[in-house]
Image (cartoon, rainbow, N blue to C red; front, side):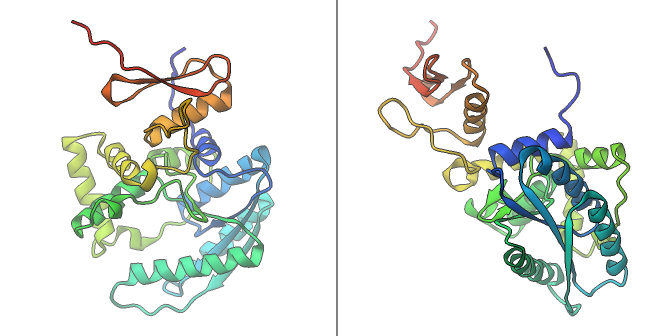
Length: 295
């Protein structure tokens, strides 16, 4: 049956957590919570999925000391955590305004979250980056002259950092917030055109979408393809001789999902006319010979 509606944010995040972030039962996850729409949506998603998938969730907010409103925003985030039964803590910093502010704030936030993860015994730190964030970051890196490795940005998992929403669009996040009537704060700096990211978001992306409506997806696919080992952290599939199969991220996700569901009909086309299929008895991926060309 053909799907009549796109997958929900809960479905997208559940799949990403299980297949790409590799969050296992009993894992302790710390959520970076700002009170903004993206992180409040992720708070709700992880609180729901934590009960289903068996991981433990806590949250930490970082006040950079740059906006007076931040205290009240984190107070509201803390209250929401209380309603969901999620432990919440916060850190107040004292960053000075000036050049390179966003980069300095980002580095200070990452260091603070690492300290909070250690204090709470959390093995993983979840951030609310979504597909639109990835697309913007690829473009920013291109504008700054990054090479292939520099374009492999914001993968589903990198070390202790996981991004459960990275397969979701910003529109998916907005719909989730509306559907569940989730309150959130708006950071005015997100609309300040003096920041490069803001100009990319509101000027460059819309222009590119006029030329290619699926540009965000294309940019995310580029980031996946340029990531070392072809993408997200999945096991390496091997043929019957033990030779690693040349699968990219999307192909490994497809095979991994088929194996997890016990499916027997997954087929993946590879370069050179070869085809990967699952052995109907062992369910192991097998590499078939090139298909003969039609004359």
